[in-house]
Length: 109
Image (cartoon, rainbow, N blue to C red; front, side, top):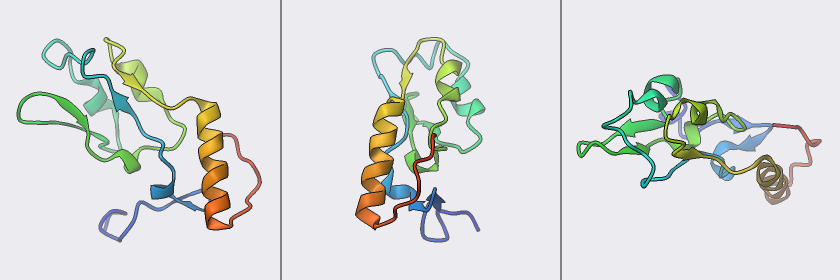
């Protein structure tokens, strides 16, 4: 049974994954699926990306993305994939810890 079927995306550093808005964004103006080899889809072992019937690439499973991992962005030849910066990630984690009352020590992503 995968995490999604089990009722959630699991935890990251003790924080429910769905409370951490860390995932890629695709710039539709830059994304050129007809001109690339869809490296984003084949590279991502978490199956975060999908190709729609109209050919566009979308972030289909955002919370399956590994927190802090930006390696897929280097696979796009058109620089169409972006992520929140590391400072924003630290702020997200701090806010999520405060919301959940979980005061786990700061961990670098």
